[in-house]
Amino acid sequence: MKKKQLLIAGGAGFIGSHFCDHFLQKGDCRVLCADNLITGQEKNIAHLYSNPDFCFLKQDVIESFDVPGEIDFVLNLASPASPVDYQRYPIETLKAGSFGTWNLLELSARKKAVFLLASTSEIYGDPQVHPQKEDYWGNVNSVGPRSCYDEAKRYAESLTLFYHQQYGVPVRIARIFNTYGPRMRLNDGRALPNFMTQALQNEDLTVFGKGLQTRSFCYVEDMVLGLERLLFSGETMPVNLGNPEEIPIIDFAQTVIRLTGSKSAITYRPLPKDDPMLRRPDISMAKELLGWVPKIGLEEGLKKTIPYFAENAKNVL
Image: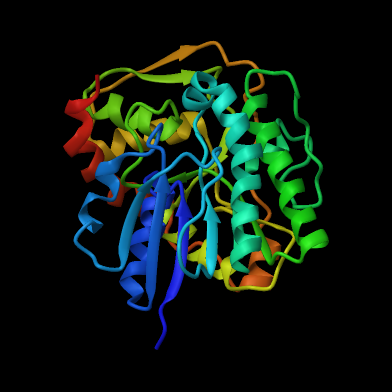
């Protein structure tokens, strides 16, 4: 049987590397991983180098490129994704969402491949509708400190949809909500890596504001399965993927302390500008169209994640 050929852009990143693993484990896929390693980590994919169905290409998707042979699926996960990263690399983030998405759509058109865009819940901004459904247009500050990421993804969604309408490229758009698990960078600035690293080192956990802002956290294994369901569906409009179980950040911090057995206390700092106060997906579309719901609860997922952070926390600069 002919193997499916996948190009995973951003495949050395957190979710991307798990996606590489997932498809290679199926045994009927060949994976080409493209990443410029600005925020991706080669160690995330090093264990795959001996697999004859895996190939790594160090490539920045903002530069036009081609690959030989057939490609059946192009998955665009190439972008800085944490506030620390995209505020450090704002121009690169905007280029990844614009030029990068354009180049990968062009490649998809040439190869007659299905294109999947990893979009984000950040396109909803600081939402005034809760939970967030796909038909909500969002509340985004186009010139705020998070705008380089928000607007890059909003543009990428529009470009993706019009490539489908004008050129017939089969497209999928996943609006990914907070995802966690092994291979997150310990110092990427997001709540879970911060809390895990601080707790395992018995340092005070840093909570912004009063910790009353809410988030919903989806374990990476569930997210990969949702992305796969979407990839093989016929849906071209955006679909929310995330865990609808919502938790205040202060409760999340206390849960991390309890599960790690940490002696940490909690300290409070001013809330960053434009930090969303509410974030929870309405996944009705994913349930109906994909038959997908996340199955791994927060405590189970955290227990699966703690060993990775425990092993790597000592290496944080």
